[in-house]
Length: 202
Image (cartoon, rainbow, N blue to C red; front, side, top):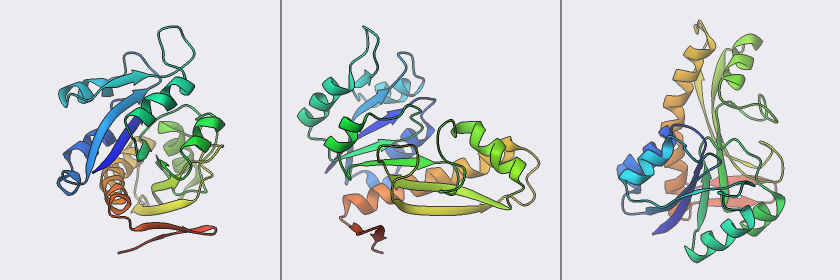
């Protein structure tokens, strides 16, 4: 079983997609859910599945990223999934779990990524650019926002979208498909990094 921790900041629909995926039932165990918010709505999902939750940050009632490293190592975590986590991961944490952290981004990277490009900010920028397609990207996490090697992408037609909210709805459906699929590929040992490119076996 692939031991996974999921980082979230919002309602946790991608966390739910992972937990509900039939293909992942016998491949993956979500052993921890981490947020940057004490009252993160996604924690309600985690608690229904009896998954331990942690809040990471600098406040007294939060766990530090350094202490979280110890927690995740003790849990023997093989893969960290950023599923709507809005904070930049510290460099030391990224180096500790090199090639073991992936992120899902609600646009087709390298476009519409970077600092401040999350949630509706992304979909608004896509809408205002008059882009005809959008989609979701999954990439390895490095020390800066949205610049790690891309693992997989999926497109959705938005040529008739009337609002950023409509784009968001279409892209979210794609996210719920592609994220469990990539995690399954990782669990089956079908994702490889060859120099500057990522290769995913069918």
